[in-house]
Length: 364
Image (cartoon, rainbow, N blue to C red; front, side):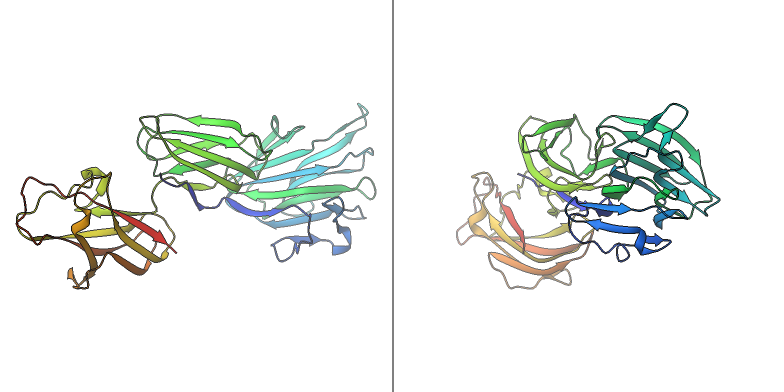
């Protein structure tokens, strides 16, 4: 089995207000003063209050990101509106607002609103159920320097924010997939798995849209190889758009520039009493690994592993301290270390016997 691990997070910030939150420490600017805001731990909401000037909860702009909010806000006065804002000044800003339409006599409100920023272009969306999204408009606005939440009008309804998220993308990505594999992604937030998408006949990398869903998600990810065999089955909590998942071994053994499975872990026969091989231990991800333990193990019930010892590399040659296991302090991100394998027999070797073996790799 292989593992599915998140190697890059799409989350920029996430607030759910079920506990006390330090908004300033999280990078938010509260305008015009903090007395326009209070957290209701009973409701689990951040409440924005009206005043003589607009109330803003703002932060710096990423180049590309998604701003998303679950809220309760039902304005009933024409001078009462609120929602998302891309901000340059009070006079220069674009708004994705919920408001009361006095000409029709109804309130335009969405429990879920979303603003998608792609460079200098902004798209606004609203949803009643967090699944079906209506586009409210799109505009290019290079003048913006901040974005966030606003509430306008001297009086009116409190804007209650249940959750507020900023994340990098509306897609999640998978890499290091077995060629021709199938990936099934299930939502397990409610306890009963719900299939969200199936990615079939994949290449090394694949991506899946999570545009329809409110972040974060709790996912079960299953990977099947080209033969239909289940090779990975992992649960990942608090998934955000922009997350990247590595779906293979995080540390792999290479020989002559190829993974061992390409050569079916077959090291051939001995033409002498011993034979040495220089192998490479590659870190496949952008994160350094520490305290790596490597041990010899049998490969598919095959012959050969019993006569194998390993030692570290010293300037391109064996250091001579052979044993059944090795410990490495660190392998830097996207880097490798080398070690040596020695197959040794005390009897005259039989040149028709191939030696096959594998390794157990643990990161403590």
